[in-house]
Length: 452
Image (cartoon, rainbow, N blue to C red):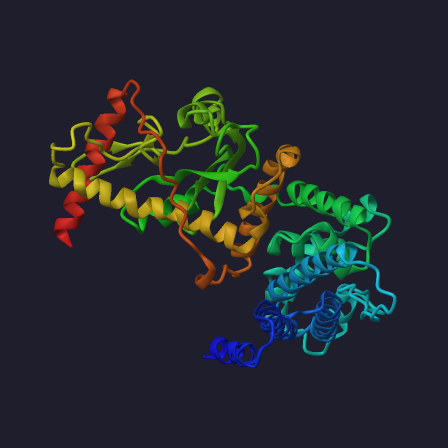
């Protein structure tokens, strides 16, 4: 209808003796002007857009600075990241705009202006910094932090001159807990990024040196076997599993990662760990080159306790349960497998596999708790940092054990059971002695199930 109305003046002019071509041109010009006028109403000036973004960003920055003790660390880290990205994009936008003879005054856009006092100083001074805030920030209570600080202070004080031991420990735990960058850590603790980096590795080293006794495979065999005995696994000394830690690039091939072998007890504590194996290695090769294997086979210092006598008179030596990717050995019992899927398991085999699968949950749960508490370990690591990753994994495991001993477990809602898929089933030579031990234990488990 609008188009029809615009043509009527031209038709009337033509009927009164005017030039038809000229009147048509006049009509088109009127239409064009109306279109331009409509278009200009929808046109957004880039300068005004930049000013609006700048104003919103500055408001968000102010909100962050005023509420960084109230917001969760995960929230402040996300907000900082978004503000930094917005600020960078705004800077690029301004560089593309033509210089105006009457430029608009834009609000300052630096989203991370320093506070008069750093976040950690204000955190310590806050009357509201209760245990819930300590758990949110460092994934441990204030009492556990203080106890850990006392254990490490001597090592930290002599190794770092530019930062006090409490700041060094808190900064390192914050990075571990949230996967925060050194820049984000430095901002919160009033230090330089290079100092935050050095403090992190000094703290990791101190934890490895002072808490190494928390790997108890060689010192707590009786406690461990009693614990598994309650789960109808007589003479069991742990559960062995593998986990993957992701690496960027193709240093270890496509989708490459580092493998981590861990022996775990019934509580989910790490008893023995071996980290840093490339994913190109087979699980049995990792086992054969680990200190766990040499501690049993080559220089016997593990699993040297007496055999357990079953009700039928069978003797079960100390053993570990392992996934089907490992070889079946007299001291490493893996589940029953069927190469032919059409073959069914006997009731005795099913009883063993069921108990085995339940016990293997201890490994998956331990890995899940480790990654839930220390989120830095769940991030994809850069190739140039790959040599440090095993060191940091071990640090996380020791802190995991430390906190279990302190009675502090990772919040259940954040724990995801880790069960590594795609590991090949071991197809090497089977140990006949190991077969007899597994069969005897399977028969015992089947009898226990019937008695229940």
